[in-house]
Length: 388
Ligand SMILES: NC(=O)c1ccc[n+]([C@@H]2O[C@H](COP(=O)([O-])OP(=O)(O)OC[C@H]3O[C@@H](n4cnc5c(N)ncnc54)[C@H](O)[C@@H]3O)[C@@H](O)[C@H]2O)c1
Ligand SMILES: [Zn+2]
Ligand SMILES: [Zn+2]
Image (cartoon, rainbow, N blue to C red; front, side, top):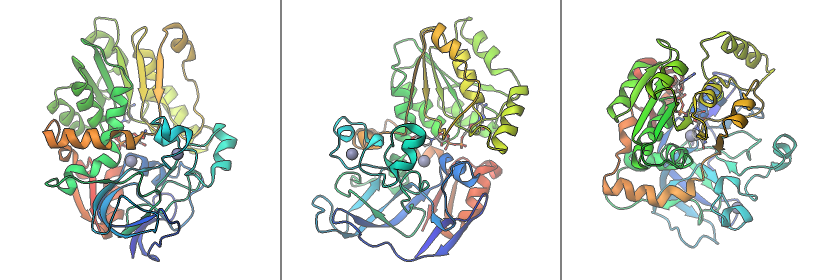
């Protein structure tokens, strides 16, 4: 089959690789009909996630048709059309039973590696390094899906691929980021990053009752899309976002802050330059500029929700501000399984049409171009869907 393979920093190619096979009795093989490129893939593309090997198949946002099931699979059958969560979960461990799916204890065969760094291992993820399981990803014609009775959800009749594809990651991710804010009536929510995750966080914040949402980025078309959803906007290249937020909230600061940028944020000040150099030579693994700004901007007693991905260690987190302003920090890879059904229902009810974020539809063969334009925000690119 054809698959998008990682060959090093800024080098992804569509290779011919062996078709996936059932390895465990609970596996299913999915013929992929739609898949997408995520901001998290850019961290791999830019070479910031360790333990990638040349030839690894990328992709963790994918859906398609079941073409084969292992002997223990009860709920899925050949021909079912499913969306597949990017987190791989067993459904039976301490964490899965507590609805904490991205923390599954049984899906990362390389957990020993991660334990050295994090103390404990999160769940395995599709197409996201050997540190997180070494699973082949879904930017391919076919994928093997472990625990097939636990993760994949059948798509309701009448919904198109593009309407439901983002249930695999970015819609639940934006939604969980907003839910983690515990929004109260009258709240102002500030969202750093107007990429796909930020866009879903903005819309979810409104769905969960935010009175105002303020969106921060420097890419005009992304800010425009945020504005369309009802957000007020700040272009951090034109004004100091911290100062602007204070002015826009009567000096108090936003009640809830969502950091949807992650480890490659742009810094406009001297500290931003230091981060860039230190990350380049791996003295720190992320550039936490937006995170620092969110912590400093947040109102006293507020919440900072961090869907943005970090891999290792970052410098100069203003711990003093966290403690002395009594902030609550919440984060995590998304517990996608928790949100699949309720968010599919929201799509069916018409609360949201996730297709708003798609700017590019490409063939799988054009994946390398897709990564390039998404990474550099060329051609007004916000979200790329690949059709195998
Ligand atoms: N927690 C999860 O489960 C999960 C799931 C999916 C994605 N993510 C993460 O969410 C983050 C965003 O993903 P995406 O797909 O939207 O990526 P993206 O790269 O398209 O979006 C990031 C946006 O942040 C903006 N940005 C950069 N520096 C900034 C700053 N200092 N202030 C404000 N905005 C700034 C960029 O211009 C860009 O528009 C990534 O780190 C990704 O890995 C997490
Ligand atoms: Zn993703
Ligand atoms: Zn589990």
